[in-house]
View 1: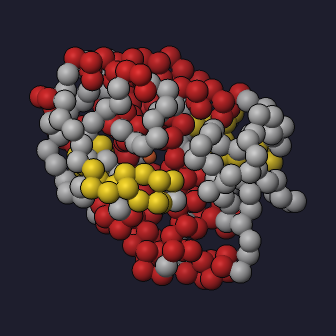
View 2: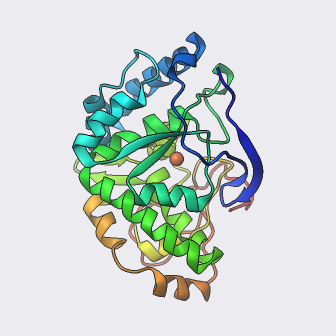
Length: 295
Ligand SMILES: [Fe+2]
């Protein structure tokens, strides 16, 4: 397999991570090795067994609609034909994590960057940075949902605005992404279900987020979420629960500028906090939580 081109390491809200060449590349599909395809198959099979009773219907429908399967790593151009027809989004292959403003610009133009490389067999359960399985399996199925697709574009536009306002605004907005797009839960008639890509691409967290007594599960509130720190070194200590993608989209429709100004004067909540008067689905036991090291 080719090697992704790293350009520098950068301290970001996601920790100390490599930032890659920012350009869009061709997905080098022909260069994937049998091991790469086997890694995809193993990860895919594990999640296919786990997720039917855990992931939201919209995600499962998306996986089926794309025809994602055990055939191996999909070709982005095949997925793009389906995606373009459904919601006008397009996958672009990239070397890895992008600088914030480049990432926001892609989303604002309905382009979703996907790392073209996949993790190694010894990294099935943990990887510090997003690879193809996380980006593609975790994020892309929901881009077929029209409301969620619009939310992602609105996030990109909001990101460009926040980037211009300053680092505090960017941090508030990054927390929103973290607790929704990456680690969000949704309430359904059948119980809580997963829609966050960070969970959907992780076997361990797909179980923990719904079954463990340790973390909080708390009703989504925009300003609360934007003012809550999070963990990058462990499973989440709090999950926020939306009622629908429409609720999420509507809640994030207003201009965030006054919210950023308000939050500047308020100390952030710790990742494990439960506040008075919020909608608590589960008040976690905190069992096994590490000493405070929130981001
Ligand atoms: Fe992600």
